[in-house]
Image 1 (cartoon, protein in one colour):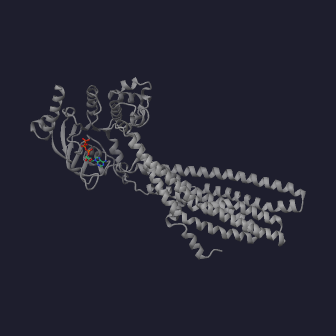
Image 2: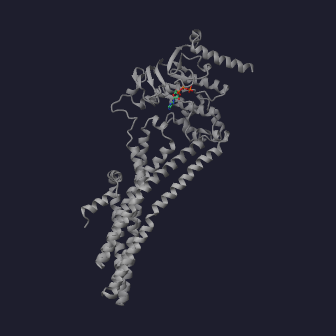
Image 3: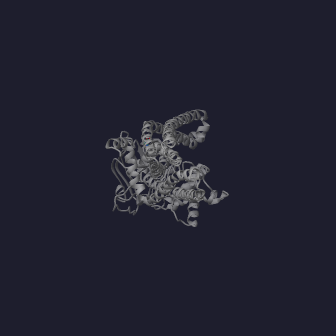
Length: 599
Ligand SMILES: Nc1ncnc2c1ncn2[C@@H]1O[C@H](COP(=O)(O)OP(=O)(O)OP(=O)(O)O)[C@@H](O)[C@H]1O
């Protein structure tokens, strides 16, 4: 029996962190799938019992067939061995299938949970974490939970039950030999403990290297044009080669650390078997024991060797999976940021008047971007934001979508503060065409449909026609089913933008945000698009950002945004007459145009 002291020693081998993670996994995923685990436990019990039974039968095989030369025993014992092996085979099959199904379900459930949790984070979370790292955590986390549970269940079910069953066989055949096994086992487990910290440290480094390789190569592939045009390939390969080499080194160190338990286990196993052979052999030759007992004990010991080895290594093997499971909990424990309190009313858009009142905001606390910005975008009218680069124009649009929370001041639509209505109702009232005209990898149709799921074919075509996209779409062999490539890489900038505009047409939202929506178009397309946009803007509140003042001359109101404030506002002619900031911009652009014309 184990004393309280040895129980404490055993508990100490498992760190509190490990205990908490394992406990939490058992209370969540383990509890959810207890039926599957119970069933696989039964199968593993059958495997352990048949394995032990086979070891026990070895005694009878030797004694009855070889010593007593009983020929009828040949048939009975062979039949028993075959039956047990078949039962064991079926149990092994059942165990593997049940455990894999439960494991796959756990991975799938956790991936869904992680996805939900990630989507409830705000835009700032995604700007602050690289996609590659989020993806690695997404995968490693879900897999980690499955691996920890499966490893513990198979260790306890298959390995521990086998070791217990085989120990019982040894005790029945010869209690003293069982004692030898029981002494050797804790030494092995204790020896392995020293390796765990090392394995944890190396694994953390290995994961970090893997994240760096992923982030840097994804960046490189996405910016492949810049890499090639600046002939940065050598520079890039040197950097990533360095990371790959250090990952290789970490992986080698990891294998070395993990395998250090091997020689220890082999030596201890050899010692145990040697001792048993000496003791039991001596018992057969001089102590009146039967050779059957001897063989049965040796068989039981040999059969328990592999499961015992796995049990001793359990803590090491768990280490890496536990880090994965902790990543899962890191994500699941992140409070959902974008949650509207119960009972939050929906935004009711009447005309779509947007009001900014003394808004202060910064992406980082120490760096204010908007410093008391105020303006009104009247319902159904077009308001243009102009001003120097970095002044905060795109930030204004991001704030209307409530991608970020403001520091102070208010933003209201038709008198309703946007932080007091549901995000869903707010965002579904806004059509947004951004500077980068983001397209999803998929077909043109799917990309337009993103504006309003369930729209009919006629509506999609009408939206594309309105955005002057229909003709070039029909020029492609696949028409609306043509694939656009990752981020729309297989289309020109202007085509991408027209699809993004078609998407906004289809959405038909009462408020329209156009951030440099015509930036990537040549003059001819721009003229066409301007016409299309003008019809899109009709009866909608439109906020438009444009660097080229030519495109906003007809706006109902122009706001000049500089260093986070509206420094001037009015109609084009009013502002020109005022001869202030807008006028100097206008002069600058006008002079530029004149120069280009005379060149
Ligand atoms: N996601 C972000 N995280 C941190 N800082 C940001 C982020 N987006 C913008 N900024 C900073 O906020 C400031 C305002 O940027 P914003 O994009 O609103 O300017 P803008 O007037 O639209 O400029 P441009 O005309 O060049 O598009 C800039 O100094 C920029 O560096």
